Image (cartoon, rainbow over all chains, first blue to last red; front, side):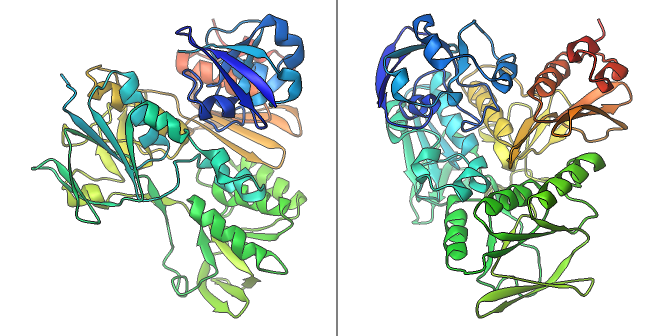
Length: 103
Length: 411
């Protein structure tokens, strides 16, 4: 169980509790604007791009190589960018704040 | 322009239809949106059907495209389990199986495709032969497989669906034979070397891959099914799965006298021969501005991007469809990513970092057409950028994996 907060490009701040699965799935289930998850969560489309709040970046860690490569196709990339289909919901991420990179 | 009293009807609620509904709202459509589908399931991701949905035991809710609440929030009237049987263009209405009439101002056809059932004697009467296109299909396959002891599966067709299904079934411990009619698997979509790689990959995972096997007769026995091939060989299995492609669903459009040619004919905005009707996704044979030709593509990317373009045009924005096509396939620990379309290539260049990480670059003379990247997202990403930018490339640098890939772009 972890509380995940999303901040959208329009400034809306929304918090949801997730049990399992990926953060992308949680976002899509709750219709977070800017997270599409077109490929269904297999790191193939780069449509679930978020900026991890730097305070929480040690918990998520850096992206794997394939994810880093895929992020090259995304816009608005920052040092704490991640594709949130690759972030599994777990207790260590409780309280995390993610800014959605796209509108 | 459009007003609150207008009604947009979308027929087909898979990747294209659902995206169109949400994109209409995003583009400012204030009228009613009705989204029809004959299936009763909340719209879901299709690619996992032959992959994780088949071999893992997640509930199907995990694969929903959007939550139920999302449709309500966007004020999309989701009409599931309703089959639309007719489009009356003069009256601008569609009619359901129950005989109910729904008027439209704009109509989007996202009709998808249906699995091809080859005209093999015995195929229609068999209850052990399954297509794989819908959630219902996969549920049936899982149940049928579960009911057998020996878990022997014959897959007819060595395309992406057939091979993904083979990989998933191996994970479930099934004994799998793939029967491919052509000389090699993936013959229609990749070069020889890629076909060879996938053939070896599956063989090393215990799948029997047999090529030049044309099934000519199918016969059910009490607890098995026999497949007879044209060369006299026979294969017996518990169930048989068909993966020989799809044909676009055009009958609704055909009966409404829209122009049909390998799908519903559409321009580069998705508009059909009727200015108030659009056709998107697998069913749409659309004009692609980038390739300057009509294309009918079967992919999530095409469905989603075409839906966005059609929705924008319905809302008064003049944009055309010119996306670079992309595809992916996951089999065992292999991730294949494809950018572009290799049709018409004259040369293939291989860049190899290791036995399980490499890429094939398809050229027509000096023009890059497509990249097939195996466990090599860098190749895919660079290929995508170069295709978009129509960048000239140094082929020798591409072939040399000691050179940094980025340097292959000619300034």
